[in-house]
Image (tube, rainbow, N blue to C red; front, side):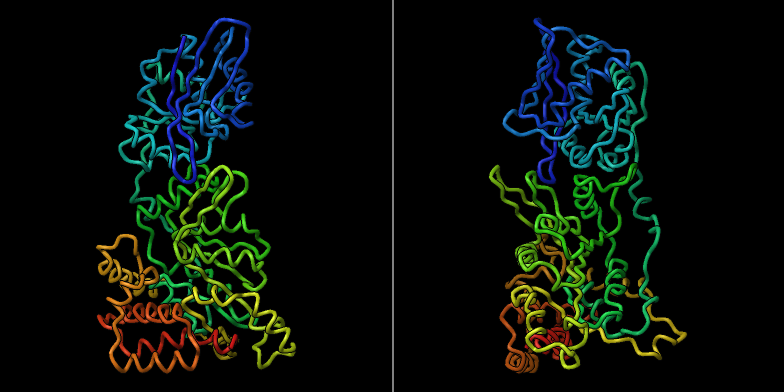
Amino acid sequence: MFAKVCSAAVNGIEAYPVEVEVNDGWGDTATVIVGLPDAAVRESRDRVSTALHNSAFRFPMGRTTINLAPADVKKEGPSFDLPIAIGILAASEQIEKEQLENFSMVGELALTGAIRPVKGVLPIALRARDDGRTGLLVPRDNAAEAAVVQELRVIPVDNLREAAAFLEGEIPIEPMHVDLDALFAQPPEEELDFSEVKGQESVKRALEVAAAGGHNILLIGPPGTGKSMLAKRIPGILPPLTLDEALDTTKIHSIVGLLAAGQALVTRRPFRAPHHTASDAGLLGGNANPTPGEISLAHNGVLFLDELPEFKRSVLETMRQPLEEGQVTISRAAGSMTFPARFMLVAAMNPAPDGKMPHESKCSPREIQNYLGRVSGPLLDRIDIHVEVPSVKFRDMTAGRTGETSAQIRERVVVARRRQQARFAHRPRITCNAGMGPKEIKAYCALDETALDLMKVAMGDFNFSARAFDRILKVARTIADLAGSESVTSEQISEAIQLRSLDRQIWG
């Protein structure tokens, strides 16, 4: 007998349909899996046969052929265990086939017949809905994640016996439902607040501007001045995730396996802080089977690179394309893979090897230059804001008053972002000022004669590049949005230049 079961697999961050075809024929007892299976898929023969026996089903005698179509795409992982087992039961007439066309299914089988969670369920659920399936059978721990997809019946199953009984119509299983509004309304378990940071008002202002426009920012200062403390609080002043952003972010985390058991959606902007020993593949993604790296895990959130000069030069240089394009393309012999990587880069570094400013350092000029030279000019040009983080004064440390809370800063950031969303409503690829191209800069960052003269002087004094010129205009546009101004004034240009000039004072 022949049976076909619908399933899916993940390629990049999207899923594609897989048909699990099972044929129970005559001949010597053998089970063959074809369709470019990897080792984990080939091993499913033993897992499935043992799970069937332990679930009081019989494994068919004779030659059983299992085909995973399309046959020209490599199949990976244990997620085909459940559809293979159901296909064998249908082909050997132990369950009826009528319901199989309506459902897609994924899941790993334990030897006892229990169904274990798998990675990438959210993109698989989206694919099942788009393919017109009425339902999706998933492990119970993955059910909440799949249930965020509307117009799809998500059936949580605990074991193989339960899945077979449901498909036979013997037992009803209530579909999983998720309240999206309640998910987004849940408060974070622990939220770091800007009111806990003493002093550093100028740095907080720079971070507010960066958050309002989605600008990359570099914090330069001696150790112990609060660079990491400030960076960790940035997600608290960013606008809340939209549903589309949350789905994109959750897909990436699901594929990598970072979702907790029962977690439905990533509702907070991610904050990723890889160690400076991270490799190219760890940061960008890759390996033999390309998977998302740290910059993709930070999609729609913050990527914090502490001790920036300590990262390998080759690792830093590979970030130039993602910073410009908002995505990273990984090419291998078998093909290329593109992952989203639209993040806000926050970098921190000491101004000299001993941590002091260059004019105070006891290091030789050559040592300082070699240290600073680890960060290339082209990478610096792609960072919109450079700000000094000075040592905190004693009176600020001991002052009883507290600064603004993250909620107060976030209110202004959200208002500025709404202005940008209205401005770029007809350009959906641009979500904030940092994403403006030459056409948008020309249209929305027009300068009067006074502002042009100011830019002319700054270009001469600081030797800014053409890219830096555009970055200053973008930052000035964001400062104007925070002020509620339709046009960019000379005062806003002046502040944007001040937020950009520190790198020329140190590197120059």
